[in-house]
Amino acid sequence: MDHPPSPGEPIFLAEDPPQTLPSADRRDEPVRSRELAAVAAFVILADITIYRGYGFAGLAALCAAAPVLLLIGAPRVCRRFDSWVAGVMLLILAAALFWCGTPWQVPLGAALVVACAMAVVGMRPYIFDLVIFAIVAIVTGCAALARYLKSLNRVALVVPRATWLKVVLPAAAVAGFGTLFVFANPDEATTVGRWLTSAWNAIRDHLGSFVPSLGELLFWFGAAWIAGGLIRPLIKTSPFAAGAETNGDRLAAAQGVGVTTAGEISLFPALRNTLIAVIVLFAAYLVFEFQTLWFRVFPKGFYYSGYAHEGAAWLTAVLALATAVLSAIFRASLLNDPRVPRLRRLAWIWSFENLLLAVAVYHRLSIYIGFNGMTRMRTVGFLGITAVVAGFCLVIWKITHGRGFVWLINRQLWTLAAAIYLYAVLPVDALVHRYNVGRILAGDLAPSVQISVHPIDSGGILQLHPLLNCENEPIREGVRALLAERGLRAEETERQRALENWTSFQLADRLLFNQLQQLKPDWTAYADPAARAAAWEQFRAFAYQWY
Image 1 (tube, rainbow, N blue to C red):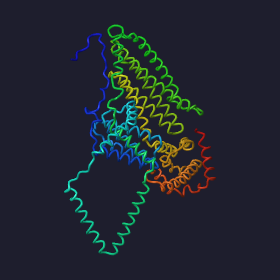
Image 2: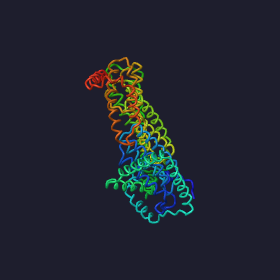
Image 3: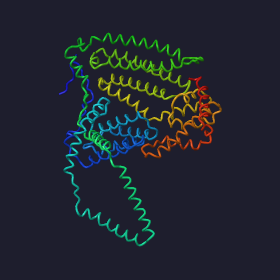
Image 4: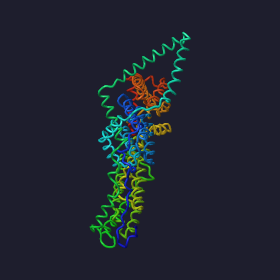
């Protein structure tokens, strides 16, 4: 029976409850036809989109279908909100792959497929657990395959005779009468004969092209192995089940480690003095920050890269370190100390200073963007500092709600994963260059340097056509030369993809090809490589003044 703690008795904090699957062991679940069908569909789709695929459209289809196949094939489905979240994230990632895919999005999609498999069987997809689950699923997929092969011996298609007759008799009647009707009309008979011959030849050629090689058979086996491991996993609980920190604190309390009397810890004065010291330090630095970088006009030659770029990165590191320090100070054993309210007041002061420091980092990034425009890495900077701020807020939540260290680490990793995912699915180049083009057309020419020095994907190139009307000649002609190069490349890409199949399709590439064909009169003068190189070099030399 629960009872209130006596004075001085340590109060142990609970973590998340252990994650378990439903009561029945999934390995004892019978193999149903839908599970075999899901594994077979996964193998077929993997063969079409990976082994016989040419690009990211196929991988997008695989990502979109994977959560559906997992739900269909799972012997027992645990309906959790996590599975819906992971499935929606996979669909968004599939859209990004279909739009303008990049290789690094592929492992992210694989991780999300594993997260879906975890959520379907009732496990919460923490990052550490996800890695262990993936390894175990890959290693033990053979157990699921063995179960499937054993179940095939018992598979028999039992259909009552009456059911067959309901299908066979009408079909036979239609085929028989239809054949007679065709023969009754010579022209139609000739047309149908040609159509049947053409269809038979197409089917024969198509099936001939799908004769599997030894390598493809091994690929099928590997795909079935992985699908079986994900649909029928052996792992049932999180290997990092909650309670690790709590048990450590309980052991420390039992042994009297760091504990004095009445729940007090000997490190309390040192921790208090540490918080006071960093509060004073941060206050002094914030005064310096606001005096030097706010409400001022920067002189020509100001070191933008050092202050606004490298400086923002260092301040982000400061925030990350402050997050770690604050989390380390407020461990579960400290929260039993009766003097902890005084320490909390100091922590709130320091937390407020850290949030002001985060504002300063955003300001430094905005200074750099105001100087010469937006880039991919500045997008990474915004997402990175936002992830750090979110992590700091999680530490505050941990302190106020008495959460443990395992709880914090799992959610910190989720925060990092969310930032990576957002960067993967956002059309970064399209957003970046839409912003830069707007500033150039408004009369601020500095962002033109980002067009001249950074690679741009098809989504970004789609945003550049308004610069064909730019009043500045080097920018206008440089963009015309760039569009000429990408137009010629797009034509070559379309010719190559005509020899491939739908798996190589990219929506951004197709839209860019169509746009550049319409704009061909504007860039055809730079189809000549020498003229194109001269215009591009003039543009680069002009824009370099803002580098």
